[in-house]
Amino acid sequence: MTPFIHPWGQLELQRWPRRRNETLQAWDNADLYLLNTLAERGLSGSEATKTANTLVLNDQQGALALALQQSASPGDASVESSGDSFMALAGAQANGEDNGLTTATPFLWPFDPPGQTPDQIVMRVPKSVALLEWQLHWLSQHIPQGVPVWLAGMDKHLPRQLVPLLQRYLGNGHAEYGWKKARLFSAQAPGQVLAETGYPSMVEAKDWQLTVHAGVFAQQQLDIGARFFLEHLPQALPAGARVADLGCGNGVIGLAALQASPGIEMTFCDESWLALESARDNASRYCPDAQCRFHHGDGLAGLENDFDCILLNPPFHDGHVVGDHVARRLFNQAARALAPGGELRVIGNRHLDYHKVLSRRFGSVAVLGSNAKFVVWRCQQPLT
Ligand SMILES: C[S@@+](CC[C@H](N)C(=O)[O-])C[C@H]1O[C@@H](n2cnc3c(N)ncnc32)[C@H](O)[C@@H]1O
Image 1 (cartoon, helix red, strand yellow):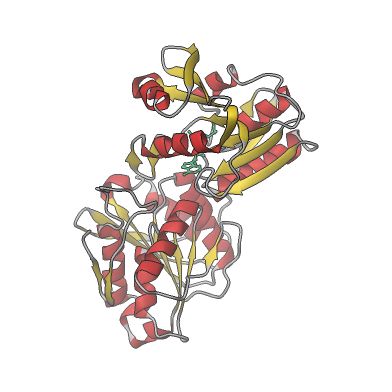
Image 2: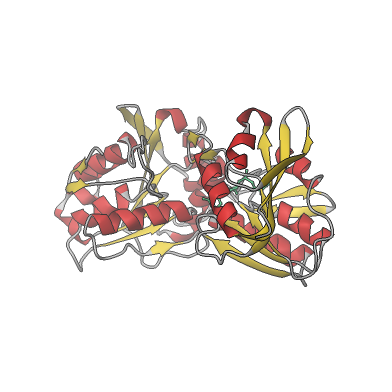
């Protein structure tokens, strides 16, 4: 693990959840560039920094908020953090504890207003342009005029239209020099809403118009994997069956299962707050009488282990990192969370060949359907 040496100290940061032989670093040069710039040119550079209130958006594993906490005089300055991802928050909390930072950074979920008026905004550019737009709009709505806004990201991850988006939502903003493949942008809050976003978007699925909040998977149209999965969902599950829509996104899979078997108890799970909010909106509109609950967390972690059926269209990336490690973790969780005789029904891209991975974890694995791109499996646990 390379220590994260920043202008105010040093942090040992790890990605969360912790994995044996982790090869990915928990911070990058965009974090460091942002903090170095704040130290030289931002409020954090002067003595004023020690009393500045900073709002951090989209911190990844706590690199920004924890470093800023180390910069601040206790009691005088405050750092608040805001984002959509449960995993990012859990990572920041775990790293805070590991580094002996005993005061937890207050955290705001996307619809919360800021707890206190910030003197500066420090933001990692999110992967989703929709979420970026939505957050810039949120800044224009909630942050007083003239508050400096600093944004950073790695060159390879930045959207081309970033400066035009800053202009559109904040009325100003420009790119700064690049540094070690990272880039910085600066702007100021306009103190008023200058442009509306198109979010949430509405997506057609079956006979529904689904609400999809900014940044949620399949923002503009139903995912083609989800479309195929809808043809292979369980029909007529018994009343009272406990079913989970794991990684629910807008909730389309769980809603379809509820439509087929109205008496089931559905748990919608996602690590994205805005995904869960989309599923909540859609369930209340299309299944108002159904027994639904909503779990914001790492998959099924924290829930009781007695599901009769788990439905999963798994993620194939973790932020900007493409891979099947999140899917595998969710398979493991599902294998543990199923009641005896329960089933995981899962769709995967054909080339990912989940069959072997699933066979190692479940009593029996059968293909229920396939096409040129996708395969749907039923994975059952033994009855005893
Ligand atoms: C491929 S999308 C599927 C969304 C939806 N079920 C559909 O079919 O359109 C995967 C979803 O898993 C969520 N996800 C990723 N990692 C997760 C985790 N550790 N725990 C819970 N959900 C997660 C993502 O936020 C995303 O909504």
